[in-house]
Image (cartoon, rainbow, N blue to C red):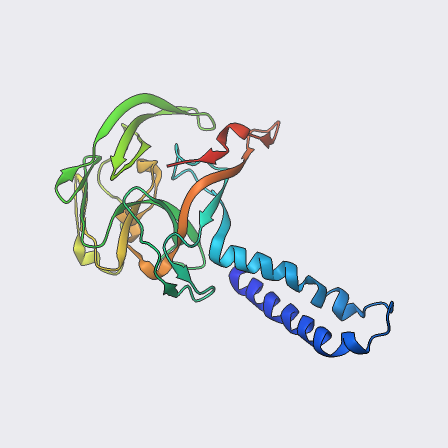
Amino acid sequence: MNFALILLVLTVVTGLLYAVDVLKFRKSRAKGAPEPLWVEWGASFFPVVLIVFVLRSFVFEPFKIPSGSMIPTLEVGDFILVNKFAYGIRLPVINKKVIEVGNPKRGDVMVFRYPEDPSLDYIKRVVGLPGDTVAYQNKRLTINGVEAPMTRIADYFHAERVYYSEQFVEKLGDVEHRILNDADAPAFVPDAVQFPYRENCTYNAAGVICKVPEGHYFVMGDNRDNSRDSRVWGFVPDENIVGRAGFIWFHMVSLIPPKGLDVSRIGFFN
């Protein structure tokens, strides 16, 4: 469902009803007379719909984490806010950038339209910028020949699936974040598909090496062995970018029983 398109249509329709009422019918309506249904249920909603449209299209958009590919940074059940203007002002629906503000940086957590199905929003971490050579070999990340610093910390316990993953602190640019690796998972990429600029990637038993084309980004999940990302389906084009994520505003505990709000997860993240 294209919610942005639905919201745009609602804004236009209620705005037209509001304009017609203000410019014509309101002047001729007797003082104290009840408003017709088309005003009560249409035009009167225009200010609210307009505010929601502007905020969601140009400022912040809420997003729910649907999978575990970004564990331990983000967990299933996290509700986050996506900064829509961090990477430039874009026209809603067509997503065309009209005002340059900034570009994704290494280490950013970015929401984008999934290249294989733009109706779906995905969230991953930006690893490679346009022109970078990204190598993920034997579960070690190297960018332009320089290995990303990585420090082992205490293992991460997956409560819902009852197992441990090796946990590390990795540094990309100025951003330090945690990542997970499963010792028994293979290093090679087993399910890579055909995608634009696939010729820029070399797959081997140790993993993958890719040259990021201009206007594109290489992204990966922090749960490295449980994430379908650029290693599998390729690069994210600039026109697919939605915004930068950085704040958890709500988290619903998934354990049954009980369900409830986990306030410990609310706040900013890297």
